[in-house]
Length: 237
Ligand SMILES: NC(=O)c1ccc[n+]([C@@H]2O[C@H](COP(=O)([O-])OP(=O)(O)OC[C@H]3O[C@@H](n4cnc5c(N)ncnc54)[C@H](OP(=O)(O)O)[C@@H]3O)[C@@H](O)[C@H]2O)c1
Image (cartoon, rainbow, N blue to C red; front, side, top):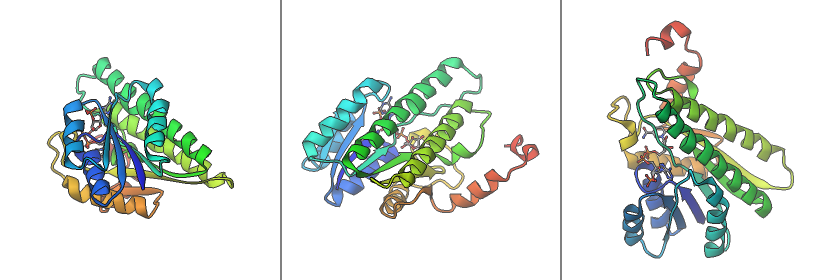
């Protein structure tokens, strides 16, 4: 398979890229940190194609997709994984703005251009990494959860679109991790998954072309509870 992963210099994205490359796939990866892109490419030079890119530079996203298309001949799978999240107890606007620029503007452009690329190609698989956080508000980090709710809703729209089209064969998957042991998780401990376990389950869910996958699987229980959570319990969280 030919794969493009937006945001694969560390954490979940890096582990997925490693897994796919090891299995013989060609994997283009993006991120801002050149030294990490170089390091990942050095691990598997014939399979990894690094592209330095800040997803906030939304105007460059169509060029990146075209560049990967030209390098590989086509793209089968695009995973949009780039994301940031920071505690914002003081409700600082600059943190909200930063999260919106990356997690909403950047990620939405990446999903849109990827879907349109697959539409032209008449086939492909689009995956976004949202979060269990998409299911509820969060007093400590409101913009992060809201950005993930936006992503989950947006990609569900693309899933509906894909199912309505008789001319194309596009799969759409929303990956919703719980806590995974990366810098972004900021020291959480509850049901924390290691990155390799998370990557393994994500790759499995993508292979099965799931509509929504909770990572690790037991987080679907939390999701079930969150969807039914009364307000008096929500405010205690
Ligand atoms: N860890 C968790 O518990 C957890 C739970 C639910 C969902 N998630 C989601 O999983 C995804 C991956 O997060 P992670 O936990 O693996 O954290 P991470 O290690 O911090 O990885 C984040 C990735 O996103 C990239 N990224 C961030 N800002 C970017 C930008 N402006 N332009 C391009 N790339 C950017 C980073 O690359 P550069 O810094 O090199 O640009 C990095 O490769 C995120 O979308 C996150 O919201 C994580």
